[in-house]
Picture 1 (cartoon, protein in one colour):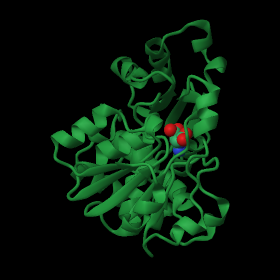
Picture 2 (cartoon, rainbow, N blue to C red):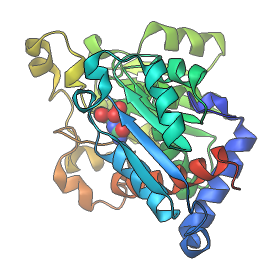
Picture 3 (cartoon, rainbow, N blue to C red):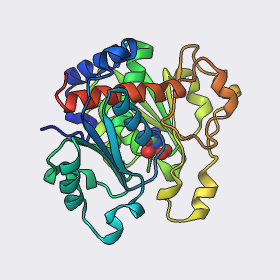
Length: 303
Ligand code: NCD
């Protein structure tokens, strides 16, 4: 039985097969409409989410399966003090596969150890968010036709943003990727990530100003300042509008640069950018459903 805790749980060849499947689902949805008939997905969300939970639910429903679950810890037995290990044992009796989001780093991994069904990490604290990374990679591969040889700028909250940490981890396995980290001093990418890049000899730069590096980017990955992970409101208020991508900055970028964002957006991308053909974040959300459909089929060994 296989779980998904980190994007590195799949080899790059396995990822290619997963993305081929996702593209086939996109092209031929009817072929897969009953692929999960009779199967049940449990969504166990101990932390708020709109798109991750609903995209999992949409994915399973589009495959013909059904969904049970909870969307906040207060409405689950966690509020009575039940451990994730016990909860997953029970969920294993009720369903065939589980997507779990938890504010504690490593909680889905603890659950996976006691689980009788595949567990998917749907985000654990500031740590990893593998299905968002699969979404990001599928979007890049589908829109750029490749996952190698590009310069990617990651901008915003690089300290607390788990989508950023997961994506960097996943991209280092591809040839000739250059990273530019754009953040205020206080929200720099953690040392364990830059140490890993140094060790692997992967080029990266850390900058504060977005304008200066805009013309060099093939992909710009914007992120929200992660309010819920701040220790004090004052720091959040000071940093939340540090970057705002607008049409003036977009004018500095390459004609085929892609703008990605895991969403939700707050103020970091001005709505006027939505009309720019390079803005790919809403399309990215659509790819999130196809890739989760492909993932469910793969982990349930139905494909
Ligand atoms: C991200 C998350 O939950 O980490 N959202 C998502 O899953 N699409 C990003 C965020 O909350 O900023």
